[in-house]
Length: 109
Image (tube, rainbow, N blue to C red; front, side, top):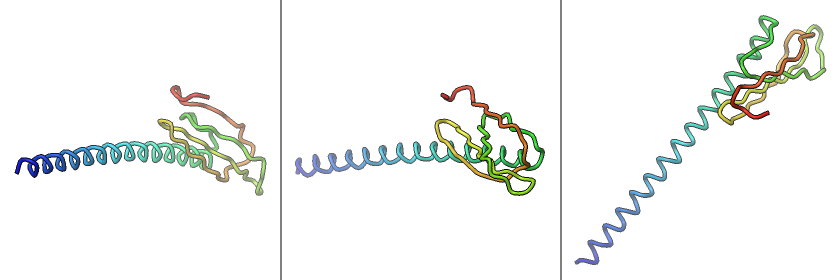
């Protein structure tokens, strides 16, 4: 009888530990996904700013012209990093924009 109770307690402790580990992994994955979404949003916003206002974004993104032109437009690479997660997008914007590289304060070069 005592062995059955001990086995049950051991099984209960094991399941509780697995539940805590699974919840921590889920929380970490959710944080990383949120950082990825923030970086994607920043890159999309920067590309949209380039396309609509012909101004270079100043919100911690990197804008690199590719050199390939399509009429009055040029391909640009826009890269953003948020909380260690990086996203890079390519898009067309008016040609002749001077490339600007800005970095967020906390990110390494």
